[in-house]
Image (tube, rainbow, N blue to C red):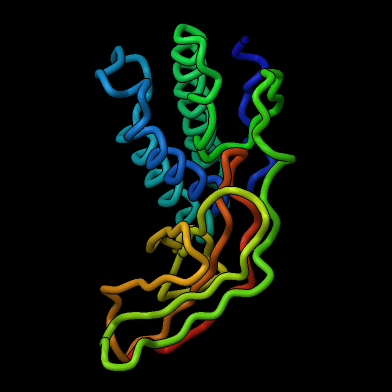
Length: 217
């Protein structure tokens, strides 16, 4: 098992998708066995990676108004990519030390190669074919969600935003579920929201569903 075999693929992501990927990755490693004991200071952890996501999001907003700041945004993105790579390398070393390739699953990253023998499926999950979001009668600020099942193994993520859905950095994760029908709570009532879903599997998250608009009551 080598670090090169598990080099992360990040360069082709848009800034918004890269920000989401950093936040998703931070959520994954926060409870990972490789981070059960505090690692050395030079190993990036969830807090640092979330901070990188926040800073890149700020630079994206700045560049939207002032294109001359593009080099600063690129430097921020490069740091985020480097820290994710270092964190992944730490987990690869942990998995190699314990001879346990399964530790490389569920990281929320698309990986270049998987040369160990354990089968992890045929690739990333597909785009959700159908997502339905509706209000729950009698429960203010609560919604019911249905996502069409797919034959693979994994969960469903639900993300939302209440501003411009074109701005990918404005999206936030609301919840995830291992069922195709589930509920989410805690939203503001009488407010317009945008929702999207994606499947998450051991190979990583799949593409986003179509955006669904709903006025939550």
